[in-house]
Image 1 (cartoon, rainbow, N blue to C red):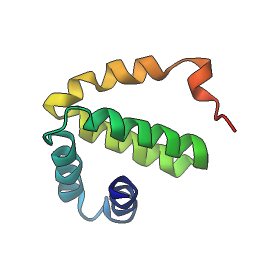
Image 2: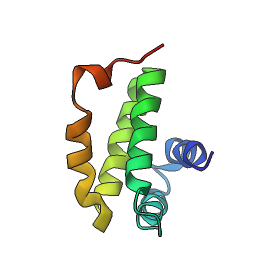
Image 3: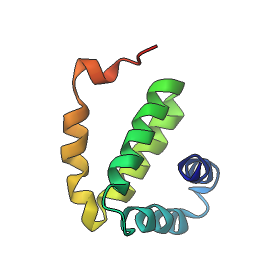
Image 4: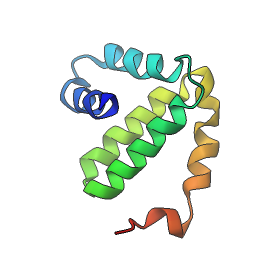
Length: 93
């Protein structure tokens, strides 16, 4: 639920409150749980595949940039590279 709300805030307010939105995503990524970045990336990938909306992909790219600016963000590229395979790109029904 938190990720859905944070994504909605990003969609609605990212142009007016860019620094605040950046701080929210980075605070989530640098939290006490090590797997937060991977959970966020899984959520974003699944949301984009489910909705098939270009605007969501644009905001997802913005969030990936936010996450990559954190210490845990060093693994963002590695995680995204692991997701690039035909099986992971098709939504299962």
